[in-house]
Image (cartoon, rainbow, N blue to C red; front, side, top):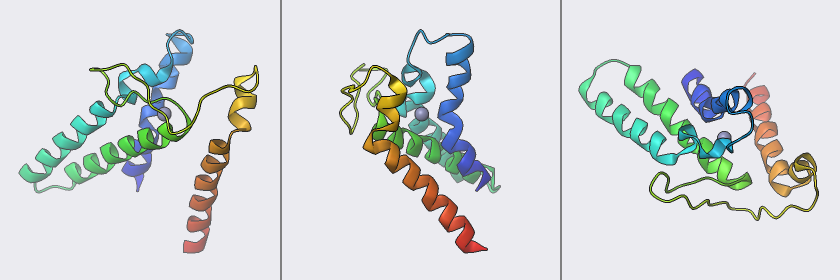
Length: 132
Ligand SMILES: [Zn+2]
């Protein structure tokens, strides 16, 4: 559970770099941690490690990397993900990113994808409370 949750948030750790060092210059979805190939390579490495090892560590690595990839699938619901990077820099999104308002916050919070994100959080809380 811990490694899955860490993997699910790991791609967005690049926001620290985005806010502090890059200072909003480059969209964080163009960083390596938001390239699907990065997570696919980690998944492949963990599978090879799983085959060669008798310990639980490669399974944790696999769960971590798999959830990093799931993060990108969910990011594609709400924004651009460069699925073919670094080979092609064509962004892909499941939603139209046409902006209705001048404020990104208004665009984000009034979009149906935000309600979908809230649903995922509510569902997780529901499942957690149901377990107790
Ligand atoms: Zn992300």
